Image (cartoon, rainbow, N blue to C red):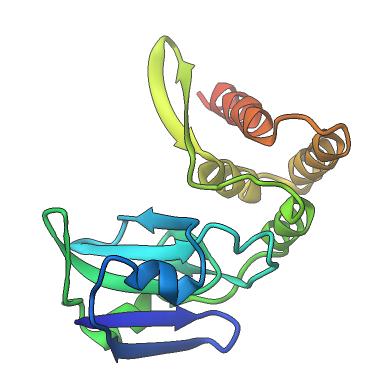
Length: 181
């Protein structure tokens, strides 16, 4: 089956052929902790859930933040199929330039078990909104330097105090939502 791999450490995009079996993705990452991301039309992006803990490099695929290597298959219904996006088009979506703010977040999170794609519910003006930590990073990254410093200081404090980091992200998401009008 035609697939793509992206290695942010070497900044390589490769087209590969894999025989799809029940454990193919787990074998590729040598892990059972896999994230399945569906932000690429008609494709599934698989990544290693432990990539932050293992201090892997990150990259953007379009607007999607991915940490560590990625394995990409096409998607038809619930089935993985041959990747259909042309390699050149996929390459044009990759950005290896990660802001220092993100790098500092990853440095702080390396000893936690936070999965940045875990969704949580919050609300604004009575409307329920589903967000994740990746969104929180994005919003605070576009904030001013003082707000970024506040976020990083509070994250470090939460980690040192062994607080629930997903709860911290929920709190920061709520603050960010309430700051927008």
